Image (cartoon, rainbow, N blue to C red):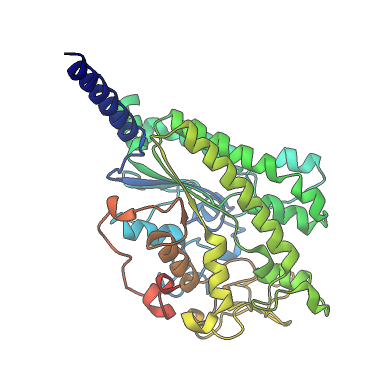
Amino acid sequence: MAPLLTKLVVSFILSTLFLTMVNSEPECRNLRSIISFGDSTADTGNLLGLSDPNDHPQVALPPYGETFFHHPTGRFSNGRLIIDFIAEFLGLPLVPPFYGSQNANFEKGVNFAVGGATALKRSFLEERGIHFPYTNVSLGVQLSSFKESLPKLCGSPSDCRDMIENALILMGEIGGNDYNYAFFVEKSIEEVKELVPLVIRTISSAITELIGMGGKTFLVPGEFPMGCSVVYLTIYHTANMEEYDPLTGCLKLLNKFGEYHNEQLQVELNRLQKLYPRVNIIYADYYNVLSSIFQEPAKFGFINRPLSACCGFGGPYNDTVGKKCGTDVVEGCSDPSKYVAWDGVHLTEAAYSLIAEGILSGPYTIPPFDWSCLSSRKIKNNGGSSDTGNSLRSN
């Protein structure tokens, strides 16, 4: 009887261990909606909704929106954004902006991302000498708006938890403007680096709060390669070629800063994943998707000088500080699909399409994530990634 008893005990222990391992795996969910927080890279019309009707931002003017929507929608691009391609992939409608919306249907998604938004509170940044007039809708304000809107979005507490559990929560990109505003007032790299742990802690706190509300699936983007941004290439233009990456033409020091933020963010996301093993916390590697494009622009159908802006004016990068896209003196290029940069700060639909493909079709998520378990749909081909040359999956 002893050997039999031993076998039964071992079998029970192994079965229990197996069940524990299975139960600790993140669940593959049938996502029914998208809940979005962030800045202009995900804003589908919130800044426009918040603006004074007599003083609209430039995104209310052509040529913004010209490629896909054929009119300005409040998106900071000529067409769709990454969030739009994700929605299409999941078979969901494009996510409507929350602020300023009249009678919008938020059943399949709601977007709180606002152009110019920061992760940290405006008052905190101003205490550090970082002043900016653009917006006061930080990540904390967006999260508060979401919580206050829940009675309208989902009704009962149980319905709200069910909604949040079955949503893809897009957390960003956020934090880039905290750094942008600091650099724009000429803070040093060392001073701006001091903001990194504070920004990441704010992102982490928002994720933790949403997990407590039922959140199960998070997509958390890192920073773009800042040294490849047209506005920085214009501001920090120099004859010293040692400052530039010979492979991409980007500013090395700023890209190293972006890499530092992304490394620290991944460390924190790994910590959260260990704390909440039943939650999918997916890092979206925007940085390396774009880097691969800048290294071989022609491979993806872009012009050989991909760093210049499509909608801009003057200088080596078709950009002049103080002259914004959408004004009388600044027009868009004839073929935006050949450009990575739309205006001095934001990207074209063609670039956003490739970033979305890199996230959804691989290999630019950490850990690798099987999106097919969430949706069998593919990115739609109506003006998206097929217009931009070869697929990122061939890299």
